[in-house]
Amino acid sequence: MPKIEPFKRKIYDGLLEWKNRNGECAILIEGARRVGKSTIVEEFARREYRSYLMIDFTRPLEGTIETFERFYHDVDRLISNLGILYGVELFDRESLIIFDEVQHYPRARQLIKYLVLNGRYDYAETGSLISIKKNVEKIQIPSEEHHIDMYPMDFEEFLWAQGDEVTVPHMRKCFEKRMPLGDSVHSLFMERYKTYMMVGGMPQVVDAYRRTHSVAAAEAKKREILTLYRNDMGKIPVGNGTKARFIFDLLPSMLSLRKKTFRPGMVRESADTSDYMDSIVWLKDAGICNICCSNSDPNIALNLSLNPNSLKCYAADTGLLMTLSFDMNITSDKEVYLAFLKGRLSVNEGMFFENMVGQELKAAGHKLRFSEFYVKGDKKHPYEVDFVLSMGRKITPIEVKSGMSSRHRSLDAFMEKYHTRISEAFVIHGKDLRVDGKITYIPIYMTMFL
Image 1 (cartoon, rainbow, N blue to C red):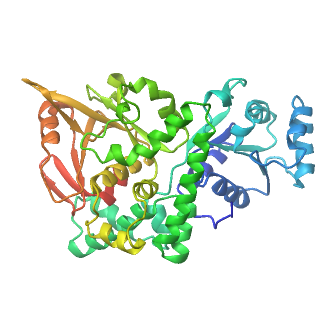
Image 2 (cartoon, helix red, strand yellow):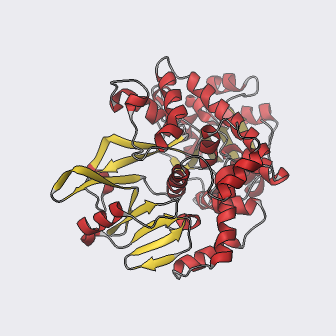
């Protein structure tokens, strides 16, 4: 995989905070493949340390595993020999040792406890599928790890990659003051945001778009990543891999429905959600999907009333979802791009808006929850609110709208039923900001501020 120029990423600040803890623990960066874990940790090592040693366990130098096995119980000799093998001089408290894609050699992860106690160097690990059974069943998970998740580039990071550090501060100011931006500025920001939605936030894809300003170039990179993900699913033990691939390929179909909850019958007739739970968990742990669970009694403790049999599967990257949705049988990438900018795609654009909101909320640290509920006197017609956040001592319901309609019956019913629990409600749409009582209508590009 060719290296790309490192982008400015928000996770860098988290790495600095960890470094200031002076070696009391290792850091574990987990995220999907191609999300930029290796690139950012190597850039961090290059800028913040006197030297660094990076072991890529997907293709370690010859002799690496043998060195680990031979000196497994003597960490000083282990690190000394690894330094010689990789040709790196290490300095006490001034060097970083990186175990890249550590899931391919879990015994290295188990050593973290003793390496940290040794105290001579800092340690960083990267990986995906860290917690699946085959990667943890024969090792003791070290408690000396600070865990941090890495996601696709958000809108602000995408703009930074284009050299734009002005747009988001202005948006944030307007959001905080609940002030509309005005038609011309809003239209400009929506165009930039829709470009971001179409390109997505995978660094290789963003790099291709930055260099060429071609959606077609970005499209080619996205298809490479989708192929990589499908190949990974093919390596899952027989059965689960096929199920995971079916679910993944059916994402556009499921999200295009009015009721977007996962329906196992779309995969296999007469199946139950429980039949596919292992595959859904794999897609979540791989960082390929974001899972949104139903909450039947929304309150600040959202995890107390989850319904595990009612969930939605969103793509972790909306750009990849758009590529997954099209066979590109439209005459050109420019035609698709312009149709999306003008809201004239011949598909349900609401699915992309809702997926994007889920992606932004997840990147901001929220657990994804939605609410299914009934109103008094009517047990036949369930209502649904797209997302519910726990904010302080109150909850915040969110409805996502892509079209021009301003109706939100479910949100209104939710606010009436749970009015004592709600601080503020949001409608996220494609229009400018406005406030109407307890409901704040925000353009989708402001989702990051929630």
